[in-house]
Image (cartoon, rainbow, N blue to C red):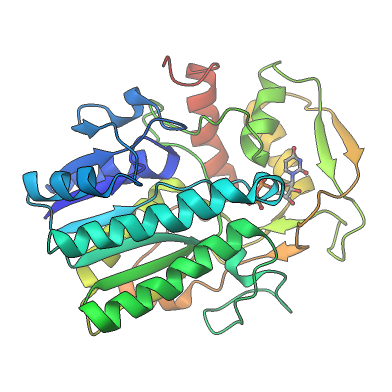
Length: 327
Ligand code: UDP
């Protein structure tokens, strides 16, 4: 298929764009490079524009005869969404509506959307399946849930086929070690811990040690970025206007913050000092996916079920690119 990947110069987008190209799809990346990196796009054609420019989007879709869109471009920091909701509502909601209307104008009827487990808010229990109520507790989660609703309405009214893929914690890097996670500033647990191993930080702050979990630290489900990418390809091929999908993507296994630090010590051989810090606002104690539906419907098998293997790929990337992408 001819596929437009918005946010394809970003973390999950670049891994997915590469997989699409390797599978024989014709790929075009659309990215404003606010957070994306030109070199993450590799040799894939890159259009540097913003989603809010609907005319540019429509022209890009028509010129490239695009048949499907995989939509990653969004702001994705929970804390920032609380302090500056305007950019989340504008970029994540208005930007996506602009994209959906450009798709209508260009007669593109297929979209895979990056949603999130943050749409579940603080779930009553874990693992979480797709029937759990969606009740986000921050503007980031709201912005993603709003688009899930818009997709449902656009699908019904205009016959768009869609998949809303609710990711748990994306982690790891391409095993080749040439693309990986590079956020400025970095806030995600695994890259921050690896920055300690690289000597770029003195210690890792553990945000909260009094959660109702086995060791008192938060539990998350770390899913390898290439496994996420595989699920996007499968979902893109599977959806029809009559059969849209809402799926959780995770491993089904939880790791506590303390366990992640321990796994990073094993992988890097570095002692990685920790310091205990207060809880971070808005962090639910445990978020672990029940990924059975995705496994069944997509015939999807995550390859990285041991978080150490995921961390090894991240470590390879961070060691070879201690300052991230050159650009
Ligand atoms: N975390 C931490 N120290 C850090 C960064 C994150 O203790 O420097 C914790 C955070 O509170 C959460 C977990 O690690 O419980 C994963 O956080 P991350 O920001 O990677 O992903 P999130 O779950 O917020 O999407």
